Image (tube, rainbow, N blue to C red; front, side, top):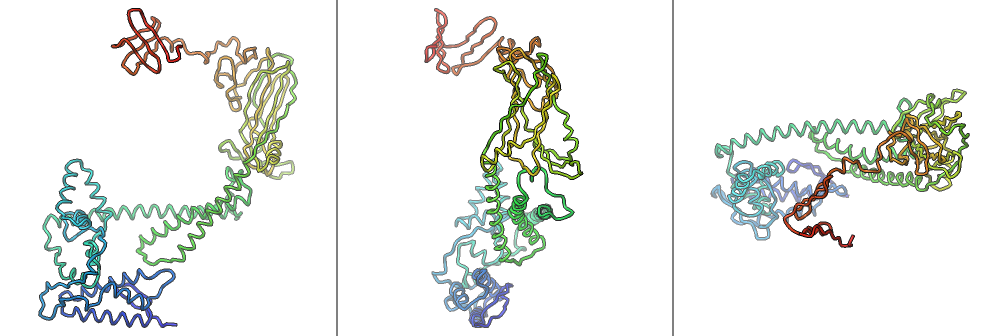
Length: 575
């Protein structure tokens, strides 16, 4: 068991072992003695301590919070010992003295910064020049040429001005030049960094001010949109929390019924909502968390919070995948239930079709969306019962083989097994009423209590013998779809007319309807098109006209030869 201390190094608080503290203290004292007579001694020591603090911070992790002797010795080895550096200035040394660095500390990885000490506008070109070890004048000339040529590089420059950080500290300036950050390089940088604001030219100072204004405006926009996103995220989090409480059945909250709960059972609903809250809520929470930290300049972090949130987010994804598979499995099988509906043969040859004014719908308090309605109806005892209504009803009219009118109803549904799907299909309730020569259909069908959406639908086929007729009421638009007829008349145009079944098919006799199976004569009066070799062919009431500069036209495997004997047309299949 080692005794630990709390110390402040370079503005950062560390927990450090007592022995490590003594080692670090001796190392810093030797550095201070070494630079006792150096110009800018305080700045050099401050930069060195800041660099040591950065390196010590890199050695701290979630599993290691205390600085040890090994950490201090490793940092000291990387920074270098004072005795490694020659040309130590004495009391009579000039202020321009430099500190030579051993060869093993001369190299480092060049990092991209904006060089604010050698800038004309924002230091972007100078920073790029340092990154690639070249003269800044060439980079500036390239940017100027591109801006003069098209202006694209102006936006690139502005983007780099925003994205690339400035080299502010001496350590950053050393990294920008590709040198290793150690005692010698920090001392040299502190003594050679003599450029100040008063020494800059008027152009530079003007663009400094302009840049500060631009950055201030940009920050204002960033903070504005951060507030908007933060408030939106908080609203989303509150909504997700209320949704979860509603799914759990909390009193006073509107239950999430409607389109959602017609697909899932109560248990599936709770687990699905929980998965949605975890998968969506956790990322939104962290976005809001980061925005709050940025707005209020909060620097503290909680590693356990990130770890716990990541675990729960992964659990939410796993739960969501399980629920998707579970719900999808209930649609994996399909089955149909076919039934012949008894029809009283009408005394006349015409049967009138229309829709029922279903009194059940008047008793339902329901919301309707995407063809599905859910609500409640009340039985004779005044008890509310859940009801689901669907609009998936289709009526077709086909020719009968015999002399009787027949009506075939086919209900279908999905389920986890074929038996389950068949059971669901067979329990569909659908109303059909007949009054003498009038046959009425319901626009909807209802599912029994506690049944959910499983792809149920109703298909009706009216078998009409040749010679019999049907009158299609104008209210049938909701249930007919693409009924085949002789003239290929559209559904809307079939309504309000009497249609007779003939040997050719369903026909509206005496209606003089447009035959959509044929092209309009006006459309065929003239056709004009061009071939790939610039020949023009025109077909109209006067015949065929061909205009070409060549005797032979080849287009789409068709060869047209025009000569004194007439026109000869050949195809690759001699057709």
